[in-house]
Image 1 (cartoon, rainbow, N blue to C red):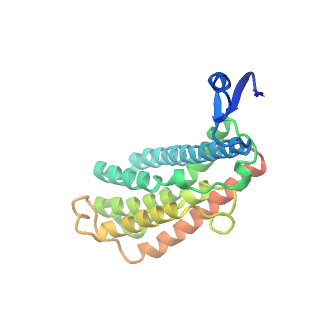
Image 2 (tube, rainbow, N blue to C red):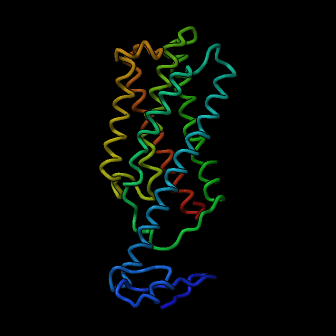
Image 3 (cartoon, one colour):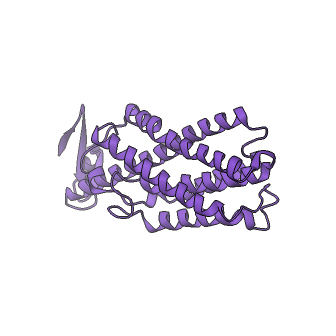
Length: 251
């Protein structure tokens, strides 16, 4: 049997067919049911949706960090984050995204074919990426004017490292779905576990034995409630921008 597939035809046969039929077929079904094809199509759409999640997460995060580093380098008398700290930050963030292939996909994301659209990805990056920069700058101001880190590079770098890592990791759960995260759509357990683990490691590092090796120092007690406020506001803003883009069918 040959069924049209766009401009091309795909030959389909079953495993129990005669040899000449199987040799001329492009696809051989091991079961006598076309439902196997439906399952394969849905699995392919799920893989595509998870690939798109990864691209959006990585690109928007890097785009936002670019503005943050550029702005900080203009007025700071020291590096906003040391090279070893940047490498550690990226390593932990990348580890948090490893289970994305196991992530669940919302039904509406696989209900119909989705083309690869650079225009949609570009809009997502341009609107979501700067959201992180806003709260990077509020963290800069917090470290400089509340905790007096103008002449304390280690304190400033530690504060931004923790805020940057926790916001990037938390926002994975907002980017991965078009719904309200946790309430309407929950990630797979491996993704939940790795993101929680990375956030705990990021919080622990400044107080750990390897903290001084990475150039970290202890953070003042007031930093932590301000960090929680930052995380809440960042999640709220990013979710609002995402909904706004969805309402306009821009992503």
